Length: 323
Image 1 (cartoon, rainbow, N blue to C red):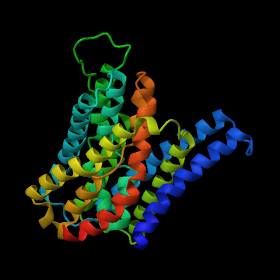
Image 2 (cartoon, one colour; image 1 turned 135 degrees about the horizontal axis):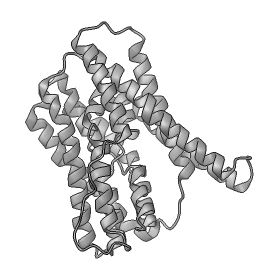
Image 3 (cartoon, rainbow, N blue to C red; image 1 turned 90 degrees about the horizontal axis):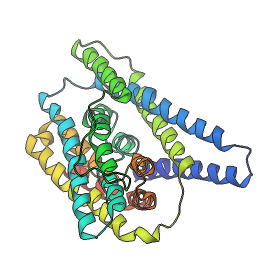
């Protein structure tokens, strides 16, 4: 119960503090201009994504027991989860009779998943420091998939797109992917050479993940805008069903079939269970903004799914010991 409350507190206090600061700045209560706020938001996200999260992943992988070769399937499970979520969202959009901009936004909410901040924090607090490296492996192809597959698909649904066929953007090696690959590579080499890991590295890995999550969610709160949520209740509930039921059921079953439940006391299977049941990522709001899709629908799906953690996290706590 303490871990559950701590997880919820970190998530919603960080978000709420960022949102409260933005509202206070808009009201003139605190002297914080919009340009300075945006600069702070970007710097916090850069620090979290390019420094703290890779550092945490490297130190955690260094301290793991010798990795099982079957863990190479973790990135494939991540790809399967994002692909399935997006496909189910497109199918739901047809059933809901959504127009093209709404369909594009629903696709983004189905495929973009908050496994970096919320997923990493939940895994750490529920499962311990060794889960951090497994989280990093699961999301190894995240940036590559999002920027080379998800963004072009979202762009195709733009009302300004006149193409009749979907053309995917050429592959590009994203800087975030380069950083996490280097961090995992360093951790793997240190692990395989059996270099002793200093005792302080375990707490440092956990502290870096918590700090990164707090910074990232605070930055999200600075950009959060609550508006016209009730208009998009049906799509939001559909996205919650995809994120919290359909995708986890399939991905957990695949992980169990691979044998993750027999490895390291079942830790990899539990990590997959947590990461496959995470809410919409804030990144889902980027393509709708860039490509003139339905931003309000994406905003509503993100907020409803994030609030859904209040119910999902207790269910995970009950499920994980049984996996």
